Image (cartoon, rainbow over all chains, first blue to last red; front, side, top):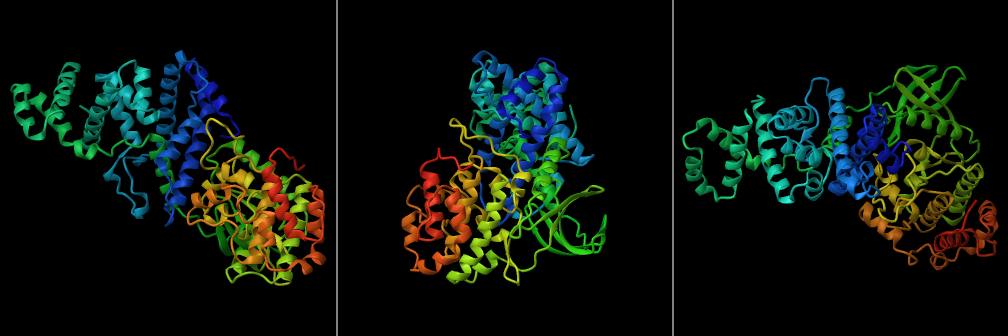
Length: 192
Length: 378
């Protein structure tokens, strides 16, 4: 993590949460580092005979970035909310910079070892998703938060429920609805 | 869409999915009560339900990393053959690994053949990491030993960064081992030279971290050169000290491209556990190589990387214990006379040398190092 400990990342996230804009700039390379690391694993996995548990890897990466173990219980919810928002900003910005107008960052299951390059039309991308999520937030802020926390923040339904102070069941219902609604938005490409 | 319509549609949608599909139609007609707009707002998401199953199921970091991986694998490094980078005339591609593409080149200034390793852009514009890589490369360039392939320089030409390395002709030890074990004398001659190189680097506190047969070259005139000394560290951040609450599953060692079984097999238990490597890790790898040279078999085998690592971590029943070494064919006599450098190495490590010969000692060093983890090796 560019020599940064999880503790430092935690501090930076908290600083940013308190309005320190410079903290975000320091977090960007940390997230990029983690991204490149994961990308490398996927490239290795692309070779025949290599199967790695990608969900475990992703969870691990999130844990390295968003380590809430040492956070006071009362602050956890706030911390998760900040982390998810930071992840969203950084990843979407990263996609924008890489994509330069192109679709980038397919959101959905990618059969990576089939050796096929999925056509852009096949999937939604991170940038379009970000826009659709803003539209969602305008009509249903909580549902949009559920998506930000789970999808960008990598949180479980339980953690998301903790942040939003609702039941896990509510989170799952919102999540299910958000998925179909966002998918429709992305398919039709016309914000309502 | 207004909030009222939204929430109505959401509520109806959620009630509808709780019903069996055949019952939904009747429910929708009733619930929407002739409001076509409302009905469309429920039906359209419903129609996307099957497709949504996989949508966003892995988090954004995963999606971004996959996109990046795809982007990188789609854009192979351009072949630089025939081009000039500063004073280096690039001749031909001679290899490609996780840490860059290697070319044979001519240094027109010093009029000599060199190898250049073009570094992949893995730092993503991270200046701090670049600077660290720079420092590491310069430290490695200070290594000067007949059994270590020298790093001459780290250069930058436009956006291309490359290492200028000593050009070493010949096959790798890995290629040689494909044909089976080495005769005892040859195994010792090769391994003693590896030990000499290791020794000299360790004196400067430089650790290889990725010692394996593929990183060892056998030149046509009988010299042995260890390649890529310390580069693994320069490229990848050091893994943080082990965290009892959250032991890392994979380390950078295993996660860079090109890391395959061939690397995992020579990892020390620390590396397999994801703990920072130290000199002992190199000695461990060395022991594995020596074992393989003599027996033609890998010290630790597995069909997959995790299986191999599990074999390494399994504990004291591995074949590299002193007992394992003693099971080698009776080769003790020639070992005694030719184990000078290994002897020196073993003595530095604080292990008295006796007639059993270097392999036994290395086996002993390894076994000791790992059964008494507190032991320091500096």
